[in-house]
Image (cartoon, rainbow, N blue to C red; front, side, top):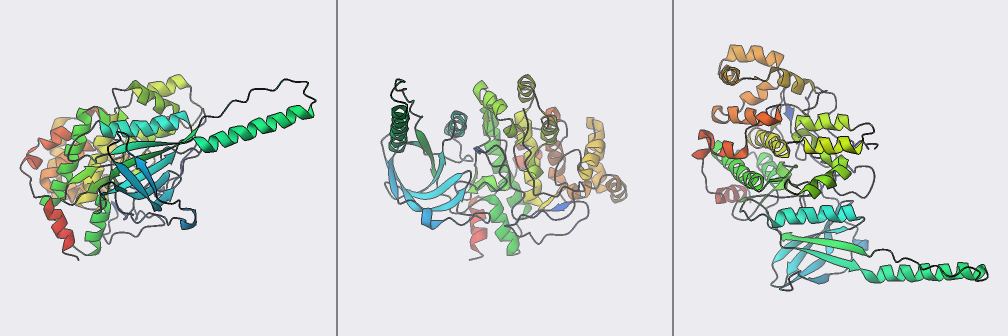
Length: 459
């Protein structure tokens, strides 16, 4: 099986230094550092999911329940369909899809909509191109529907629209062409029965509309207006995210694409984990089978938030790979540990807006030195943490391990736990529930509404 390589817009020089940029973003005015990477408003976009093409698109996937963000592309209004009303799957309400899309991409079209009582919603649509594509859509819906938690985004419905008439017209045309062909042969061959192609389907996932947008947009606005969140507010944001991910892991669901764009904010300041397009129900073997059949999705995610083992797996799958080996690789992955690594990178993003490396890959110098020097035993780890407060010792260590200068900027209380989330060994990473029970976060509290009050000061 030949792997199709995806392109990354992140720096590929291996050094991990320099600002990350995308064509549609501007960078935060953050402090410069030779040992850590400045983070842009929109980090390198993750692989588009559910593409019907053989190659992997690299344009960014939108957060699907919030207002259009910096990476949204203008819609072609000339092609916009008219407003249309759909009945909910349980026949209790209706959803009116407004005519003008708020986002269009190869991954689908996003519309704003209204429920029967005029409650605004977001409707994300896909046209099914294959049975596996449809399965992946239903996988996302089922994983979201299984979750009822204040820090997980709610999903209202999945609506299926069958384009039957169009397909019947095509089938009639095929019959007519077959008939003409047979007549030209003098009717010596009996007319073949033409098989009607399966009807095309359009799926609509219906979500609440979050006008506050996503976390990265929130942090961007604060940075632009030179407003600094207190450490307590930063920790409380992260605590909400941990609660959502801990809940998912308790239900044996792995998210696999945790990053600030995928955390939405409601009007009460509550953080919602969103965008379950890569999520896996670890108790459902068919989900893993689907993954094995679409092996580009095995190492999915945004490069700077991806765990190091995914880059190793990607390397293994570069050449032709037998199906038995792919299945073995899939069943050997600790998918929850992937989320734990991403959480560590998310906290660095929230707290200091710096990342220690662009990718945790073998060809990245900063990450390689970090991996080589990461303490393997608890005693060594304790002395390793203490070294951050010894300037002379830390300076010496940073010369050999440049990424450490990034971790020194973290508060003492959280430093050990973030480093444990970023353990190069997946089996040794600390879990979200363990971090929540730590002395660092047990006593941390602020009213989520304060996050809204802070942003409203700008207005």
